[in-house]
Length: 422
Ligand code: ASP
Image (tube, rainbow, N blue to C red; front, side, top):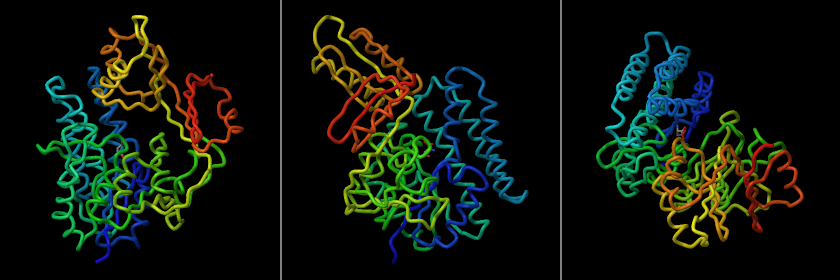
């Protein structure tokens, strides 16, 4: 029996009719039993759903946003399917369900729980469209709901995996199906012990691919991207990038930890633990080699640039003329954790704690209101966090030209600055 393979197609690879046709072409000579295809929401649908949610939260009218989202999916389907195809009725049903869910009284529910119920919709609708389109192309796949095998806790928006239960469901429910069919499913979503929908964190579909790979003892995972593989910088932001033909798990994990968006940070660990190789390949050049991430890759010293945008620098100063002590750090971290905010950079001085976090709707206000009695708090928004791994000192000034530097940290193997455009 051949080993299971996992393919993951992100939002950019299913964003329009052309992309879906391309996806079908990639699968044409690769489709086989024991293949699981994981898809994200189409294009920027998840962002669109987040905007609807933020409008609802502000008591604003979101009907135009939901109409735009519906029309986007419909127009894609009109291009791909004959007029009488059942996909159109499925779309109507799904959007009706979304509208009903959105009408629920928000104050009666936990916001994060509501968020998961709404944003999961993007993957549910895209997976229906992709599965139906592949079948129409005679590429027969079995649509499966990821929530039936991806079991999580109830930490909505950042749900943690119940690995044992997930493995059991994958082995019992999907492994036998895979003997006869390829499966097409959703990334990003799971279900809690009560069967409620959960999500694994933004961009979490890569992680889904890794979870399924370990739980199904897969031979490899392939993430299909709009770049030729893992590069030493984002080609949209920096010139002269270099592709890595191979990378070790540790190096890849380090890059994602600092914010390289090519792979979701949680993806590497489960694969490394199970020794499953990860391929990052271009959906525009599927025959090209891409990058192989595996155990035995040779180490390298190529300078690697990672840029994280939309950062906020928050500084906490003690108000009583004392110095920063462990208890102060503990207080700040406690609140960050309760708000599910991850620290991207930390700097301590005798009198202040400075942290850099991602901009997230309402979270900064909540953080400040929780800690304003204990600290004098200042913040700067709209910043970028630039990390250079294996830095070459002489190349750094050019990267900072035209920017004001607010915070800087360096070690032998990494250099980080928080910067703002002048
Ligand atoms: N659709 C989700 C997001 O945009 C998950 C993913 O694409 O990986 O965050």
